[in-house]
Amino acid sequence: MFNEKQLQLLGYEIDSSRIKTREKGNVTLSYVEGHDIIETANKIVGYGNWSYTITKLEQVSQETNHNQNVVICYKAVVRVVVYDITHTKEAIREDVGFGTGIAKTLSDAHEGAAKEAVTDAIKRCFRTFGNQFGNSLYDRSKNHQAPQMQQIPSNQNYTPNNANAQHYNPPQQAQQHTPQDYSSLYNLGLTIMEQGNSLVVVGDDIFAKKDSIRACGFRWDAKSKLWYKNIEQQAA
Image (cartoon, rainbow, N blue to C red):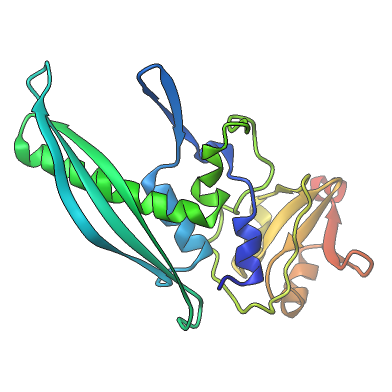
């Protein structure tokens, strides 16, 4: 279903800067926002390679709070379909979400509750695909406030390529490096990562782009099969 590059991205730990918190009673809850989940899906799966359908949307309750605001709760059942790049294979997920709308008017409360319920259901569907969609937030043994070293590059949209595309699986200590003078490499869909005292180039079809990589001062290391540059060299 997923190619090697997609599996590599799905396997990264979620970047702690994407995690939000809110208070519910005496408990602090961690979550990822709906727009973040959609953006991540577009990066990993690709635009047009996934869709969702609302199979059920219904009101659960309605009341008035102490501020005389209307409080409405909705339940939504959503089905998410993710396709491979050829659209010949698909993965289907279906889950339920809940949303609460609080407003002075019925229409505004209905709107808020319905939208929140659908968004919640979409998020719950995608979390089954792994940590990049917030699944690890359900693991209480992990400290999600600690900085995470691996993350999906935020400077580019990832476009899935074929399963045979060459890729580099960065080690635990790798960090993304985003100096401005590598825009030509970013435009080619490549990423610069920090590995120890060196910068390395990560991406698909890397050999076909060797002239552009070499022009940015990177050298090929046959042993590690990586294009690299010393950080001291970068600073100079």
